[in-house]
Image: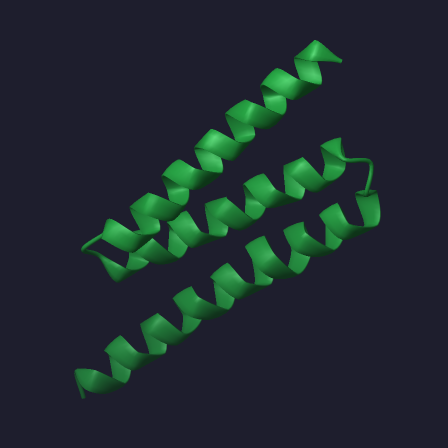
Length: 83
């Protein structure tokens, strides 16, 4: 039980650090990746809280699809801006 509490605290601190990085990043790509990392840490926290369905949804949609979509759109905007 103590191990889960420590792991939860470490994940919360890592999530907070990634959120601060997302806010302070000068590069948009770094900010998007850090936001995806926050979502991934949230997914692990949901798994620790015995909610595997919520964890799987958060990992697939929040971390995976959303991050991919942001990076895809950023690439499209850059390509169209150079033409």
